[in-house]
Amino acid sequence: MPAYKDEKRGTWYAKFNYYDWTGTTKQKMQRGFKTQKEAKAFEREFLSKSNASPNMAFSHFVELYMEDCKSRLKPTTYESKEFAVNTKILPYFKDMPLNSIEPATVRKWQNELLTHENNYSQTYLKTINNQLSAIFNFAMKYYKLPSNPARICGSMGKKNADEMNFWTLDEFNRFIKYSDNPTYTTIYQILFWTGIRIGECLALTLNDFDLVEHSVSINKNYARHQKTDLILDPKTPKSKRIITIPDYLTDIVRDYASKLYDYDPEDRLFPFPRTTMNGHIVRIVKKSGVKRIRIHDLRHSHASLLIEMGVSPLLISERLGHENIETTLQTYSHLYPNKHGEVRLKLQEMTQKTTIDTTEK
Image (cartoon, rainbow, N blue to C red; front, side, top):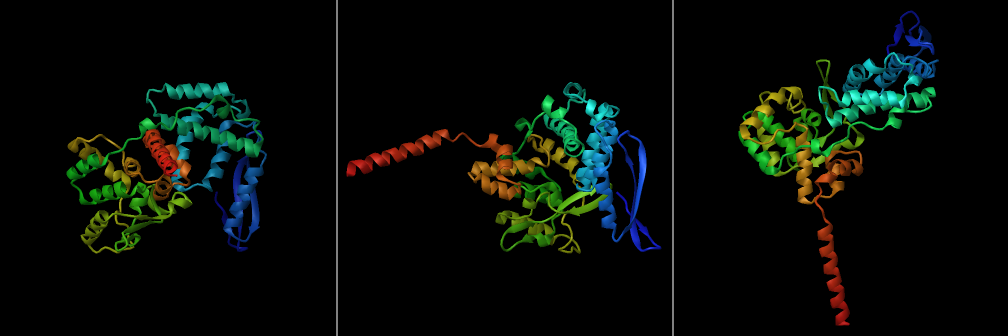
């Protein structure tokens, strides 16, 4: 969504292409904006109110949708959405008029993905289906599409708890025993004992740690976009938090930082992208004999450890930086042990106490 400077007048102008309701490409220009921001805002508002119609081709409507998303999403999030739409959705629906797509059509698309030779995971299938549904929701809200065919035909895939892997403390200790890279080992320790996201970890500086109070401030996120390192705001408002850490981890971080040459405490402790770690974790998993998990699963491992310790869901939610406690319960409810027997015993103790008190009277 570019805006241009009018050097002669010292103002900004917007110039862009758009599709009318017939799918015909047209150009729009508007001058006289005092700032670049105002020019971009005009384009955004014009596109949302342009003569787009549910009659237009799906591919043309998706351009409007993605243009709207581009100004609202983080670059890495937009890139992931763009890839999913371009590779899994557009090839099937692109030439169909938006309002001609029926639930049966979506169902056929779902079945093709469900039986695809790549054998997509349930989580990935759900993500793709949600992307399609979001496009139809956008059309309903802003362009008077009568209904969402993706919602009518039902979901595809699921957030499958079976796909969540994690290590027990014994498994993690065995893995660490064989880890032969001090930098990666420090990262694994931080991820396991704090539960922070890998992007949050790779954004850490030494100044984020309070080595006296044994805590770490999570206030930014690392991402890599088009071969460029980015330091972004946390994933959600609740992601900005302070986490207490055990003395053991404090010592590990202090020792690691003391061995860095010519290090500025405001610089990243781990100045590389996450992809550099993939080969290492696979190799050490084979060497140690523990089951294979993803780097992100160290976050699940931390949550599992806290649940086993009896930590309350609310505290776990705050520690993980979840937006609300419902997210925590939905993600980890299957890990909570059955407490009904424990409740029965506690009630039994109360009834016995009541009986004793009554007898004493």
